[in-house]
Length: 632
Ligand code: MSP
Image (tube, rainbow, N blue to C red; front, side, top):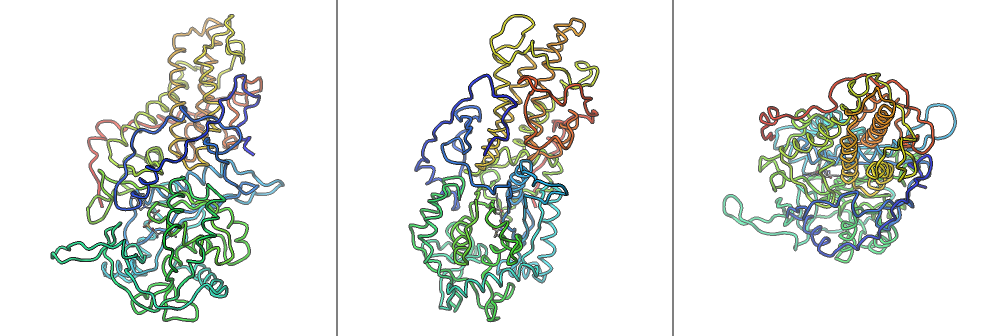
């Protein structure tokens, strides 16, 4: 059911139909496979305009002929970020992962149906994040920093928590894997796997990469000379050092799950999104799928959860970490069943195999369903290079939030970040985008149309149906609307559904691009009709002037509502200036331009909210000049 944005009356013009999508090209798959390795992907060209080749699909789905995802009947959904390693301070890549999840969670909240009946509604949307605190990587980082693992975890976990709070990441649960509730969940999960005969003890040997916390096949290891000229083994893809390990471990019967995993990915074509990443996973399933070592001897890995009943073994950090997604649903208590089937994971491409192979296999092994959706994103690079502490090019998120404002930086990352491709970060790009789209286009529009020079009474102006008849083509006075004005109404009417489709398909950047296109179109509408040239003393002019302002404020209201998940404070400022009450900000309340459709408009005649200054001050030249590359 996708009728959220149906206008009060159907459009007098026909909506464009859905276009069939082209199959994913082989070169794209190759590019994604390459991108999962060390190479940097660049977007080949500018993205397709949202208003361009995509149609407005009334029947749901992604505009490419695929069905929309299954959602819980009542709109219940649980969003997760990966839990972050605490070996180093957060950077903008981590923040990006969290913001993608935040925007999806916020969007979902805006459209969640409140349960019937009186009393406070229980939240229908959950959103969890947290820190991944066990394992060799943390153990080694703590030793290098001269701290105990627990001191390092407390310190860095607090940094992640504070950053997310500062950046408006609206989490409902922040989990640390060192918490007792998590230990209980992991131990229970382990017990279920063991009881189902899926764990056995055996000799496991191979290359292990502590930085990536994974075993690597011979083919994924290369030898390169170290600083002393001596050849050393390292992970082919990440470049991190590896060492040979041979020991008795608990082993999970992963090899049994090739067919069920394939089935899951084939039955639900949206299980892993975007599509090229699903194809990558299917490709992996064609390759060797050996059983997985899921514990380490505690003589070299003591910082972790012990295997129940065998304290000489420590549970593999990825099994420990993945179970966090169950812990936050209340697992193993029965309440988790309300949430588990609705879970949407947001992850970076580097951890795809853990989430799309190991995790669903472990879940199937435990008799549970795989996650509802796995949304995969690519990475941020800096001047074409991977961000890394050793290269000294890590971009500090605090500095960015400070310089570009919280909403500005959120907008930048989500507008520019394209899940399929790596994206390059540089400051000039941020300034240019924010000045053009938030300060000039959106802020300028609001400023112009609420200014006392055009609207001296400060009241939401009246729409005149005879000036803007709902049937296009009337040329008899007082009709004034031109074909381009009808085109604007069509675009903004279609926008909410278009945006919803983009969110459903993890294309937040396209949702923002579509809004930005409509903002530009609205500016042209104002420019074309030049309300400042109209004379309020003349009745016909005054009616048209008010109609132009009414249409513009209605457009701005739609933009404000749709921007809430990405720029919550800026959207609040915009909607407050328009006099829109908090209770009128759900996505069900959009109902654009009701007067055009012959319905009453609740805002018409209402006093506008107070003028609290510029919507988004330009990041002017002096501030830009002060900007210097900040690294941690
Ligand atoms: N601890 C594991 C996840 C366990 S989830 C059960 C982990 N942690 S991480 O801190 O290394 O990465 C967390 C997230 O940040 C991942 O989604 C990763 O892809 C993302 N990013 C790390 N560097 C990034 C960029 N340069 N750009 C965008 N996202 C990046 O993996």
